[in-house]
Length: 228
Image (cartoon, one colour):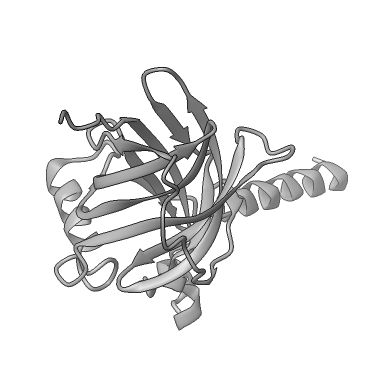
C-alpha cells in the first residue's frame, strides 16, 4: 500500500470519527433572557385545545463517541390562540415525569436510564414535575426549510426560564391545527442539566454532548363554545 493511499484512508477515518463526535443533528437554537409575553389575548382570537394524547416532544441525546439515546416527553395540557389564520399566542405544559426512552433495549436497562433522567443529575422531576413553553411572538419564516413560522417563547425547565426562537410548520384546517418542528438543538446546561457536561470538566470518555435535539409535534382543535 503506497503512502498516498495510506494517507487517504487515515483522512477518511478522521472524517468518520469527527462525524460521530458531532452533537445531534438540528438547527442550533440559542437560549436568551426571558422575554415579555402578552398580558391579554385578543377578544377575536379563537382558542384551540391541545390534544395531549396526540402531541409530544421527541428528544435525542448523544455522546461524542457517537452513542445516542432517543425518547419522548408527553404534555399535560395546552392551549393555542389563532387569529386570521395565524397563531398569536398560547402555552403548553410538559409532563417531566413522563420522560421515556424509545430505544430498543432490555426492560431493565430502559427503566434504569429513565429513572436516571428523572434524578437530580438531569431533570429532578420530584422537585420540578413540569416544564412550560409560553409563546411571546410569532413571525412568518422566510426561506426556512420545513417551517412556516418562527415562534419565540419562554421555555421553563427546572425552575429556569429562557427564551428561544424555534422554527415551526403550522397547518390549519377546518377540523383543527397541527404544529410541528424540524429538529432543532438546545444547550441543556442553560437549564442546569449538567450531568457529564463539558462545562464542568467531564473526562472525555464520560462526556455527553451539551446540545440535545428536539422535535415538537402538536395537534389541537377549536374549543367548543359553551351552550347558554
